[in-house]
Length: 66
Image 1 (tube, rainbow, N blue to C red):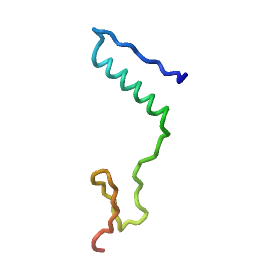
Image 2 (image 1 turned 180 degrees about the vertical axis):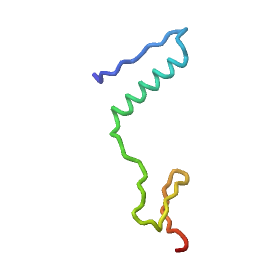
Image 3 (image 1 turned 90 degrees about the vertical axis):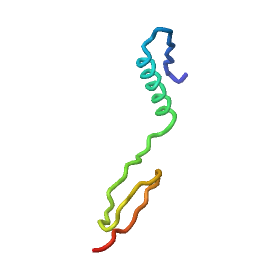
Image 4 (image 1 turned 135 degrees about the vertical axis):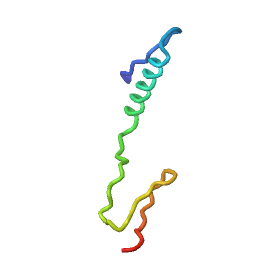
């Protein structure tokens, strides 16, 4: 038993409330099945480089000039 409560919705329920409860349920399922990750970008210790994100990929490039 996973201990998750599944809500049953009826005609006439507030649609926004239903969506909020579904999102809460899905968030609970995902966080209970997958470990959390730390996907935060960190500042580079090398000030002559820059990180950019394009199409979900992080690219680190040297800065031009001095």
